[in-house]
Length: 365
Image 1 (cartoon, rainbow, N blue to C red):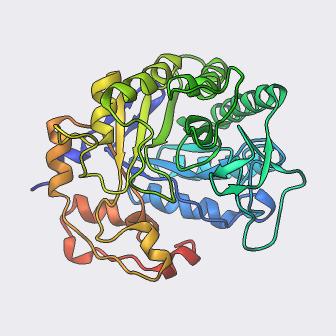
Image 2: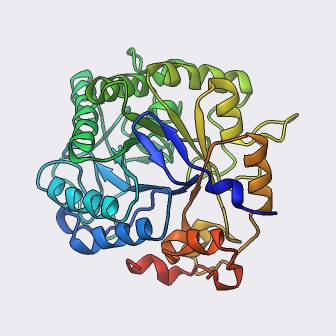
């Protein structure tokens, strides 16, 4: 099946991109003391030169003392903003578009390096999961200050010239910790017995971001059903629960839902072959990004155990895209391993596609 349909342009508010392929956010930890280097800027420029439609940055943390568990994760505040200015200017020089993914990790396990932040990790409770308590529950004042910090980061993204901003609400980090009943046992207005009630923190973050960037700047929200420790977990167990979860987020100001799942072809609920992105689009009417094992065999987490992946067919992806299930496609490992992946797909140079190995995680190709 031809991939030609993936190379139609896409426009939404501030976002105008040449094709439907998105570089997924991928943590790289190459920013000493939180400052992105010239090597980081060149890494992103190479993807723009390689015709990626939209680049979403690695997760970059907001201005909270314990928002990160890794000294080499980039910041999106203070001195680091000069580095991000170099990044976006380089991407634009190559004709690309980009948004930073703004992030707060929440309660985390201590990093293997031994580095820890100056204050305890913070979250809706002290728990990262039911078996790990490694921080403190946020006060309502902490929550209010964190919401403002998300807003400041988004405003800085717009001021620096980025084309959009993505809020990280997935994969067991702070916003997702508020969604999950196992980590959100609060009895105040930020807790609740239902997923719909536990969306309040995310809704307030989105509203503040929208307030700071205005109506015409594109806001993306990344969500996941699964937990990193349990790929079969579902926050929303039915389409009705998903509707109660997503509609308040949509109404708060999300323009695009970035729907993370392990394998993009897997159905979200029985009785329909729609994946997460398909359901999000059906429920909200908003644009969606699908992601999950696109373009390669194997899975990302398996790479840490040394498992390599090889190029795989895009036929099923294209079929679902042309059916209208989603609007954009996020690609991770293929673009981490090869900045020219998009060009090779576009030009049908399948024999030149390369696989992915653990070693690619250790360098900025």
